Length: 113
Image (cartoon, rainbow, N blue to C red; front, top):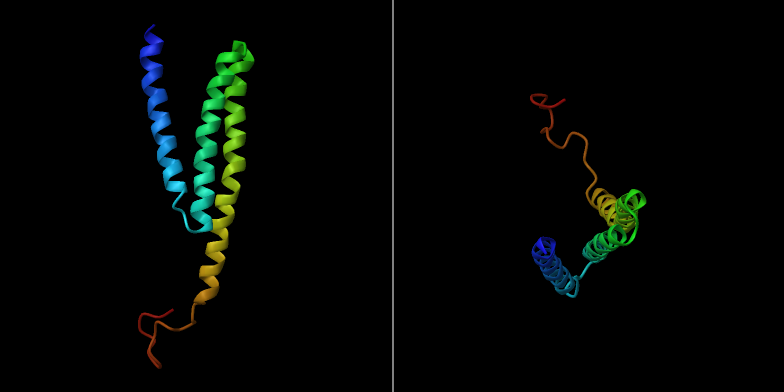
């Protein structure tokens, strides 16, 4: 009885957050935000799946599976986010390569290494 009083508000908050993620996902325009929305949806789904595993499996293996399975899902879902961040980093570095000696006026050695 007490667990119902605790679990219903948590389920309501998770439903609200999932709805907000879906609404945000519908407006994304670039690959990074798309990958982030997929990761967030996978995270919410894996948390729900982890709770289902915990309640349906016996205690010794249920807790282990309830932690390991969502962790694996979230790591796999994070790979595209990391790939987009690395791609953006490479693109940013190729656009404006640093110029050697750009901080010093010609002939000045003060403040330059």
